[in-house]
Every structure is written in structure tokens, then in C-alpha cells.
Length: 84
Image 1 (tube, rainbow, N blue to C red):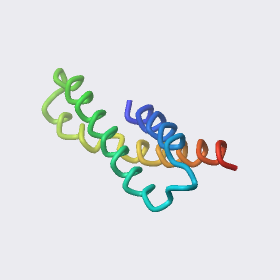
Image 2 (image 1 turned 30 degrees about the vertical axis):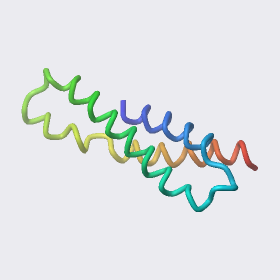
Image 3 (image 1 turned 180 degrees about the horizontal axis):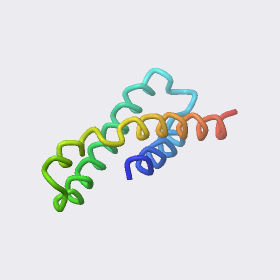
Image 4 (image 1 turned 135 degrees about the vertical axis):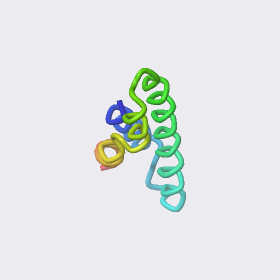
């Protein structure tokens, strides 16, 4: 789920960013990435209600690396495809 959320966020960021707003690009990336991660956290918490308490502690950190790397990869690919 977090990997798919990272892909969606990366594509959205690729469309939002353009060459004229380089100074504002880093706060946009961080804010939108954080928003999507928090959204996936809330969804994971709701799904994880039936999970054992030991596994519930892993929900916030489970899948963070695929989220970050897929967000960056799809943001770069989308941006390059649009503005190359």
C-alpha cells in the first residue's frame, strides 16, 4: 500500500514541479510527501485494527523505504518526461 502511495505521490509531484519554481520545489516535495505518508499511516492504522498488538507497533515504519524511493523515482521520471 505504501509503495503504491509513493508512486501516486511521485507522479503528482512530477506534474506539479516545473523549471520556473526551483526555490519552492523542496518545501513542496516535503509537504506533499509528508501528507501522503500520513494519509497512508491513517489507512494502515484502520486496516491494522485486527492485527496483533506486537505487529501494530511496526505499522508506522513498515514500508517507509519503498515509499521514499518510489516517490523520488517516479517524481524524477515524470518530471524528466515532461520537461526534457
